[in-house]
Amino acid sequence: MKILILNGPNLNLIGKREPEIYGRLSFDEFIPQLRERFPEHEIAYFQTNHEGMLIDKLQEADGQYDAVVMNPGGYAHTSIALADCIRAIGIPVIEVHISDISKREPYRHHSYSGEACAKSIMGLGMEGYAKAIEALS
Figure (cartoon, rainbow, N blue to C red):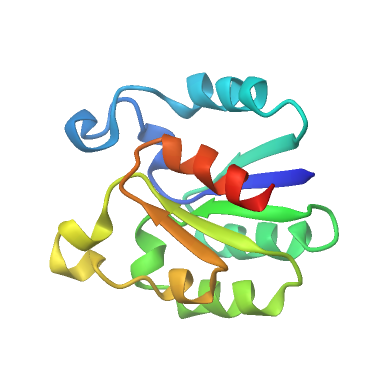
């Protein structure tokens, strides 16, 4: 299975951003571990801080990948456009949040993009990405 892991804003700072919430492992360290753990899958990775680029990558993924594992970051709580895109493409998207957004600030409790996804996984740290891949398998 070809899977795109798509991360949104500020996730490039994981490993140094609020380590008490997000941990100390960076995606540069984590993605090779994930590929090693799931050798039967072709795992691509992309991160951007720009909403339009997330939408472009989702649209490009349709037909190029079998599924997307996405952490939209803060756009989960604000982007109707991202949710509309997820609904429009023909491949499953699983949303992952490293922290449990339901236990954070009230403005983080609702995820527009999560409503459009096949499944949402939150609060498992980086392991949430692995659980998403397992759910797709």
